[in-house]
Length: 312
Image 1 (tube, rainbow, N blue to C red):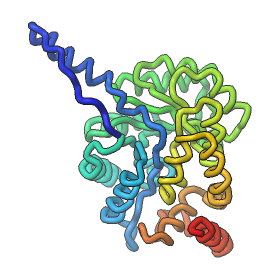
Image 2: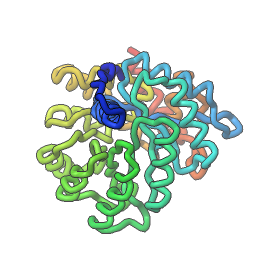
Image 3: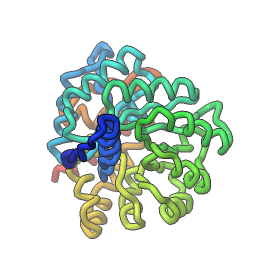
Image 4: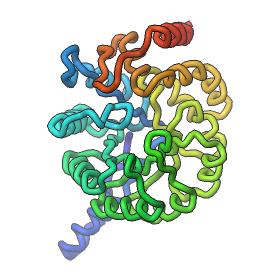
């Protein structure tokens, strides 16, 4: 994503000058994106990180006009990435992206201490921001959510709160969203509850950006004041997702055209179907890490037919 050059207001006092630089850096809208791809993590046949495939996919995203890339989220199989791999992947992505788009990193955990560690690491390695899922399994109360994100806020890295109750067993209620939006480094919400009433309520009251976390609701978000999406489908069709957030009439057409794809991409646990699809397009091997398994033959046939229809 392009940003305007920083215009320094040179102060007489050196301390004031340094503070001016810092303040103006913080004012840059580095995370004001519309379209973000929740990127897959490609693996080699022997389950190592496939960096040549990663570069190929990143270049495809950037040349297609995607504003931001999210590494190591759910789609990126972040929960099965080792600590060593996490550092290497982020460092590699920072280098090859080279500020051509916004780089986000999934740093969430059901342990606040671990989420803090991952978020500090992302900041240190040069990520622009983080996407942080709510604590899962052990869960917490709404007060616990606020305490969790307040602790992360102190790190100083812009972050997006990720609400996906189907995976976490925990939903962020609208009143809690409003409380979290008061945090200085909280810059938005990725909303993937799948609850239409909940989504519409968030879109009605939000004071900071709200992003669709489910591609089949992208058009709904666009027509009701949402700010963009963090997409799985854009791994495969980034140009169409970019176009979906440019014009309302075009958005509906793309919604209808992608409806079958968006359904089939969740025929099994994400990212199993999108990995299969990306393999069919020649981007990477069809390899996921256990406990995930390859797409079933029945669902693979349906998805392949859907992909072929998109090409026509």
